[in-house]
Image (tube, rainbow, N blue to C red):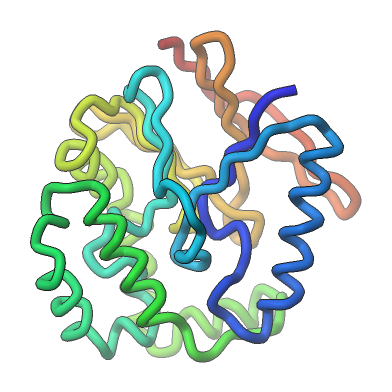
Length: 234
């Protein structure tokens, strides 16, 4: 049937309140994919940093790169309260891995250590938009960091490719929860977004030398592939 790539944060490894239910849902997801005859590739993210295996996947001979996206930022998730107050520890982790400035494996190793050591200690349990919005803007610097990450992810993605994967012409990420598509310095950066408001979620499909991108139509009962937005031929 094909292969499904889960680009990090597939399950919640670090947040104790959600751990058990997340583990059950991960088992359900694997079972569903097996029933549908779909092979699975799981990449690690900042919420599941202990996931074994690679932190990225290359397609089209390295011209397409898929990775979660926290490694684009020096401190992974600069909007997190724990990182806002522990900048010194972030610097120490980088100092422990000097090759991370040019080696992709070391760079991902630093990102995963930041995620584990400076994980969130508190987690909002409400799913309503106003509740999440309030959590996002307190303290105010948290909101500023979020917006900055949204606005610069295209530029940062291009720089990441230039530094670690110079052959990559296209980078596919998530992490920032804000869908979009940008052309920066000869690189195409795609964020597939999020299933949580106010953003939307996009699908990507690699088939027959073409990469397609489109919207995911969401309803209370079913999610399905929606309108195609772009097609790139390799």
